Image (cartoon, rainbow, N blue to C red; front, top):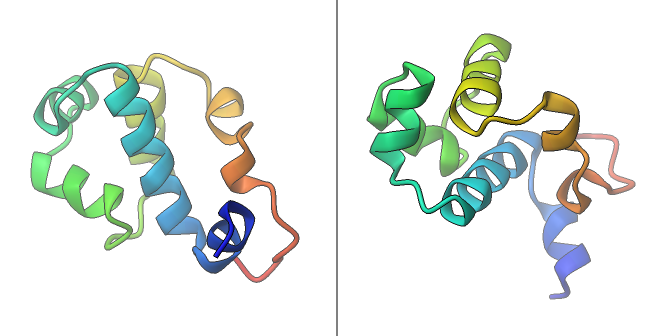
Length: 88
């Protein structure tokens, strides 16, 4: 399965979780550190990263803006979100 095929197979909550995890690891942050910076529970962060929980817009803002120190536009401006599957 190619990289593009994998992206098509993931639903939106899985894509968001994967993007958060990739960015967190790039910044060399532990899940606990990102959760603390985002004022969220670490177990919630784990479920979000693994695509097991629906994330609220408020929590997404906390993670992206407060925790990862980036804009929502930059967060979503990534190839993981660029697919032709409009069902996600």
